[in-house]
Length: 258
Length: 258
DNA sequence: CACGTCGTTCGCACTATGTGCGAAACGCCC
DNA sequence: GGGCGTTTCGCACATAGTGCGAACGACGTG
Picture 1 (cartoon, each protein chain N blue to C red):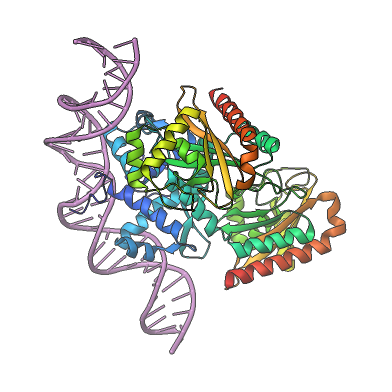
Picture 2: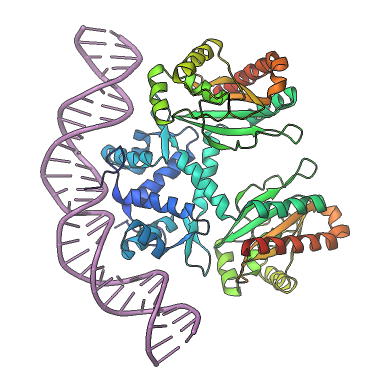
């Protein structure tokens, strides 16, 4: 039985199929026709149409009038928005970030830790102080090379960090990227002690970032507040930026608790 | 059997359940526990866990380490991004919008028609010329009261428009909103003739908007390019704005074809 | 106008697939 | 150690999902 594919095991057939259809359709810039989907999934047409009907009924898929291709529908959009919300990007929190941005004159970021992943929940920037180019709201990679990423790792215990590194081995993004597990662990210890993480040109050249942890009411580290500046300016401003992110993180934590 | 709920009919049970779980979890700001989901859907725990396992395996759901609540996972985020892409918000298209924004000094919008819905695909604005407050990237309501909405309706035939109005009856948003079907149809005819749609204070007070159609290579109207300005400025600038959106729409159409 | 082609629906027969129930194995907190 | 909530497991049943083939319908073309 090839039923149990990857690692897991279970998995309900028709459910899996429906989800895979969603991904397939999402991956196709102009959508897919029923026939294409049936073929790529190796399904009979009858089955395919029934699955598609289900998806369409709930507005996960839609189709242009006249067109025969299925495209992502509005429920997908709604879920996307819901995700943002779950990422804690509420108004009071946004205001904290904005205040930070104004105070230090640098783009401010809110990141949230979810499981082993990191999601950028909100970015507050301006024309004068634009965000880091490749950073968008949504999930983020390269936990070993970003200030908030290291902060997340530091909130886990050694075993969890080791497990994480097995799955996502630390790649060299710049000349300064840390790729050695031991060196990384040392840094994490220091981060645990200081409760602040710094990154200088480890993620992108010429760029530095500093992050402080956001905590839940229970005290768990649930995310981070951070700002980024030009690497050359960092040394002179580090004390000021550290105070700013610490205060920002504290304020966000308070908003969450309340 | 209450199996066939709404209008449709078919619907595959486990598929529907999985999708509903997604929505449920999305609707809960801090996620849900397995038990809560089981209860709200009236399912046995065994079944619930299996469905959840499926969702989790494909990364549609995730859970905080330690926490027992399920939250939306990264696949949802990916789908959201994919949606943006399907909405044609590619780089060359963005540049057209930016150029328009710079040229006329007003926020520029790209909207895409999908089935009966309208999605705002991209907004190009600036501090000096900010976007309309309640307009965000994603699906948009009130087709009868926005310039691009009327443009979409105008691209449909009378029967389709009638069907649309049955489902979404035109609400009065401002004093100038058109709520009469006959009056709306007259406007649509004029829009079909002119190939431009205008809206003055029908959607929001003090605001006016003008939109021109984006066409596919085959000639179908697939979306619109529009700009918004203060209602009081509109009369004096209408000729200029009309030229701008017509040109913008043309350029976007060309980018799509190429 | 009759003919292909493609997209979509329908009917049917079969059993794999999903289901509920109950009980057992954890993991936690008091 | 005794409860309590969460999660996994096993089993037996039949429903729910499946594939196949054929009919239907809408286009477009020769």
